[in-house]
Image 1 (cartoon, each protein chain N blue to C red):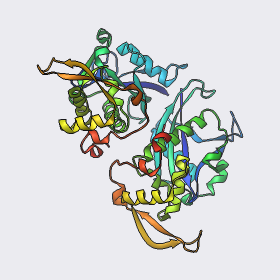
Image 2 (cartoon, chains in turn brown, orange):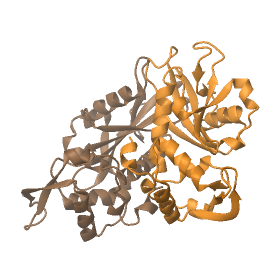
Image 3 (cartoon, helix red, strand yellow):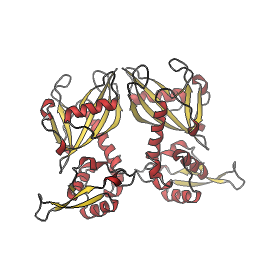
Image 4 (cartoon, each protein chain N blue to C red):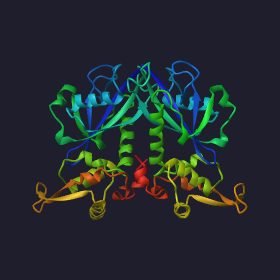
Length: 225
Length: 225
């Protein structure tokens, strides 16, 4: 039996949540869009294989990577492969774009994703659900942000992840009450003359254990599967 | 490469949380305690294989069974097997004890578990963490209870799952506020003359989406990994 690892790579470019896909260069399903994956070597651990694939594709090490689920439906692919899917959260600005070309990789808006090979669309759906669930209890979405970011950026990210509109004033108020953000003196003036203050994450508090972020997103209980 | 499924079966007997283990009847590691598992057939899905193993061992169908994690460390066993672990939650009173003998199966208190083969102890630890995490947001622990149960039983279950003591009065108050329980007229008089009222679960409310059960257990944030 063949065992593979597939990586679902989510990124944020400061405006929108995106997913990194590759154009498959070999049969079966050559020329179609796909997640990046590979077979497990006989001396290789699963986490190790996933980290290797992620590095090949993005040039990044030490980014957020978590096992999602093992997919083993006997009809999922022509060769009876069992795939262990992982998801990664990265800041697109750190991503080395030159690696794109080797794999014909492209970033897609998560809401405008093409049809993928095998059960890869299902994997992506389950990964989105997992991120919504996890982000309700852990501040994992900060993994997607640059070191300094604005509140409008953070709000866009939450809106894309939960695929919902969020009221600006409630969001700021509830976010402030988490005590996770440190306001910087510098402003981002790229979008308006008045500008928006940059913030950074309070890393000590970020390490704290589980808490509730459910209230950042109105009606989040119903958006999480 | 070989792919196996291993099942971590948790049960509640009305007093304590237990785990079902088998005495391994073949090499390697013959005679040692182990989770129940088996290799995946070439036409078999992962969930299907896990359900089959659970049925063989317990005679139960349709019980709570969820994929936990795929374990693939190259040194985890002598044959380079990748194991997809599942956990099940069952009411021990429904369990058909005659099946015990075929597999030399025994229920152990989770706090008094023997050393298991391979990485099975690690699997059990991760399953316990997952249940603590999940029970903080979903009423999954009711899967372990009989149809009618007493509050002291429910409290024992929570205490065993989180391995902590819970104050009786706070527990009742917070539990009542979940609105999940329906009080019955019948009493359980097996433990005291005064008796304890039986309750049942409000199944319509149980189907509701994610909510917070964190407050049922004092300091739960720090008990969840």
